[in-house]
Image (cartoon, rainbow, N blue to C red):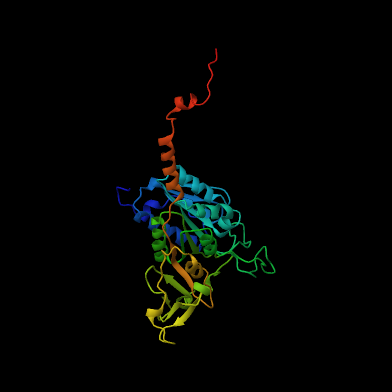
Length: 337
């Protein structure tokens, strides 16, 4: 662990940040740089891995080890990095296209294996670097450079993929809410296993204000809910709305009406192993429901890297081969004259 107190400035590189002015990536970078000093590692114990896309320039702007890899392969490289050096704190930076289109298979299998890496998805619902094509998360009907008459594809929901792939940690944040993002990133880093954080990120050029109807200042109190483990699921400008179960479905109620008070509101249990309610919370959408932010799911489970280390130790203890000479002289051997 780190012997000196690091600051956010220690994690800022000397490279010019080449994102568009107003891009949400700037705020996410700021939040990560505020988070890392709080985790207690030395700078050389961090590795930032990215794929391809605007978000994937991230390693250049971090004064840590990093790898700007190839399109869709960040999950594979992050997994290999962690397996090769389990003591590293590995952060995968990816976009909605990089992770869920060309990288979709690597993405779900990294989650299924529960490798101890932190995956941050910058979700702006568009391909920004390649100039505005629709992505796997673009809303149905959206007009883009590659869907001039509106996309007819149904979008992925990252929470669906994560929880469906047996994910143990899923959270959601907003690019401009640095305080919330920092809190979530810290919890993600402290989770032992694959953590996935979806960040609603704004691309000012190709999908400006894509999340505005949810997080816009004039209505975000009524259309968002920040979940906290152990606390009632209450939201609204006056904290007068809440979530209850109505049969097998969620329902929004108003406190003080129809006999509902805070004692009847659902209390968030992020540690519940059964993913059913977590899936419902991750899938809530307006106008019927608020969109959930915060840590939605955080469940303890054995990790791939820990089990791999344990397996290697167990096999080595039982193996009669202890060195290269043992290996070369094992099995059938011949003397050549």
